[in-house]
Image (cartoon, rainbow, N blue to C red; front, side):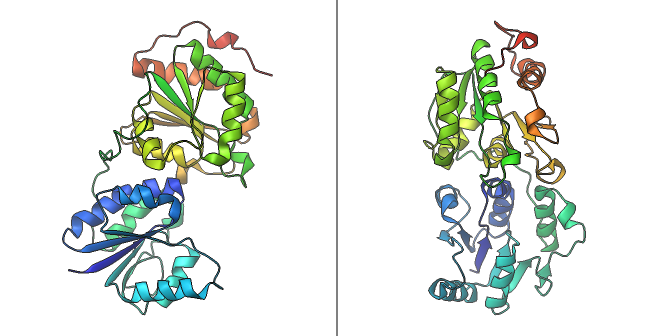
Length: 323
């Protein structure tokens, strides 16, 4: 039995996109001991998966935390193989600590070096599969993770999940919260329950929307990642900024509309659903110029026929813009 260490720290979108790689590794090494090295936000999600024998946490402290880095060095030197799916500057440094075990990653001196010169231009899923092939592994087709579909609260259907947050240090990735409130109002008038999600740091966005439209359901900071996955799987559709929960929506094969600004490139990082056509993107240089009317019209034209829904009380053409 070989001991194989898989490195994937995050973030959430990247972690969800790695599900197919995790399944591929378990398939190719069914009798070996697979350990995942990840960061603490993704530990619970990994521990309830069927892929790993152990899950260890590396929250990437400063290099001055020598005890942690001695632990990393010892870990790397007692495994037989490392699959580096993070491929960051930090994990490049880990390669130097490892004492040259069998290693799959982008470090030029590794024995399964992923050196495709086009890798940085690839979508994350394509790049990951290309790395697996370089290591002699055939990627498995993607599947909805059935161990997550029953997780989370059971809400009356139909409901739509709204993701108004994004990384705090990248404000250009956020559609204005007032536009989300207008969208939420329109959804209520169509007979669709809006559900607002995000981590605890997004609670102010959820509160603003629910104060504006009291019938919206605010779950910001109230779901674990497994619960969020199940919630998304059962949703009629999801709408949000380019952020982790939208990749989770695609992973759970929830029809999803992601809003992109100039701050990220959908060719490289757009959420990709399992069912063709279930993931769509609206791309504009500045999200402040994207009107709520346009988003509502897009949803009405795309998701309503998909879900056999009929427009209800208010036409998109006469939508009320909220303050």
